[in-house]
Length: 252
Image (cartoon, rainbow, N blue to C red; front, side, top):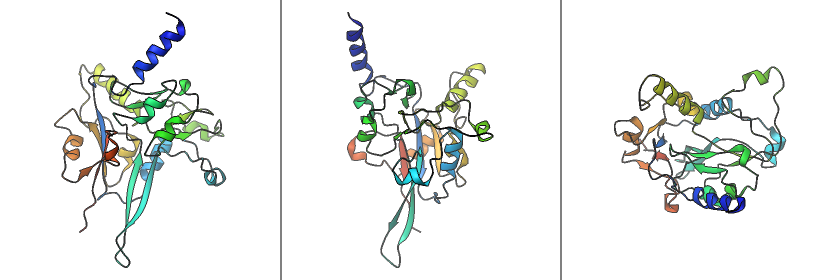
């Protein structure tokens, strides 16, 4: 079998959604819209943790923003009783992710923990994944970004700095997940305990609107939260089977 034939066979195999019959973990996040105040602390923490560059006002006007998590604002009701609501939006880590099936080089795929992950040095920048993502949470790097001294000292050494021509998006702070799994292994435990992994956005939320954990653990906080009667998924009618669950806002 030729090298090209082997590549094509592997491509067809790995680009199929749900390649793993069963995940080791199934990391999930819940967002309580009743608790979210729109303070954007999650956005700031995400930028600091994941080496996300600040592109400036001029590039933002060209539609070249890079925000792994954004806070959507919308009004509900009629004047004078209209209310301002907030909705944090990040990669939904869909189990049936359309971005995975469309990537020509399998740069985005599902790993054994149920995460939609990105291989930066495999990405060729076709931006097909961004076109097919219904949540608009994938971003393209138009430049090689640099941090002048002493700002370069604040970069997180556990996270790659993405280069020009590469797509990027929320990873659920996969570096923290790996660290927690390594610590559990060193401690002689087979599983990560509930609450041992907190992405930067979850850790920084002052109102605890974000909860993160393994949905396979029926005793975990996230399992209890996602089974709340207020729970729903954004664009659930598309059958992407996302791993981010929102709790509806309740009017007092």
